[in-house]
Image (cartoon, rainbow, N blue to C red; front, side, top):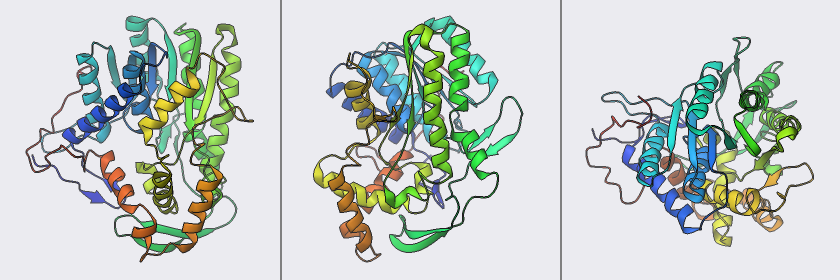
Length: 396
């Protein structure tokens, strides 16, 4: 079939397998170009199919020759209907890993569930024995709690007061004012339950109980802080409370791993285009201005550049892992540089529909958005027939 992007609001309903394959190949080539990383050799990535999770799996495999198991929840293809992008990303990853002689297997299902945890633990027992790195990179808006059966939904809302500021429709380039109503009674707790650290701790507890964590094992989860421009809707909003919980959980996990000399870290990464961030008012305008400034300064990074730098310059240097005063690894350091933020703030004040194409990088934002779904890659013929029925080799 001929596969084209089909939009519904801020969601693309289609994905392109050849574009996803190009995405994976581009990331692999970048990692290989930066040299070998003396990192973990047996790696579990929870949330492994897109974004930072996919880049973590690629960096582990092609930077450190690691065996990887990836867990994710993706929609497989049907005749005449494409899979979700992470399915095609994983199919391409496994193909490349096998060609390089690297172990790579995947599990598709709800990572919050006891069933998928058990399936994953059984696979580790059977094939790897133990893992020495666990990457937790889930980004789901909904969680069915495995103990209570209650469905929790996260929300991205300010706390206390209505928040009003500029935003942009990245499809049209229209800059407008937006107001976001504050969270209600249960919104904060539900968001913490979905996006906080409870499930991360459950995974680590389950792995440790079965003796599947190697001595000195490391686990890392991903967070974001951001600037004062976005803090009302992000870091001081409902999602910020969840990130606070995630970061506090790292210390609890480290305490639980003392007997095996294990450590848990939260890495604070930079703002990037994701399916989730595209739907948050204010964030697309901030990112389009940030991209313009960071590209001009020569310090722009995508997910693969961020994770490769995290591994090579923070986690696996052979020295103590550098952290901030709250114990967090910071690879958002270039985004949060004072000169970068001052320039973004000045552009924010100027931004209008008429001048955004000039003072911001809306085209870069759009390209990154379409890239998420396998579109707008060079070297891919989007007018050619594509086979939507791509299988992931390890998933029968």
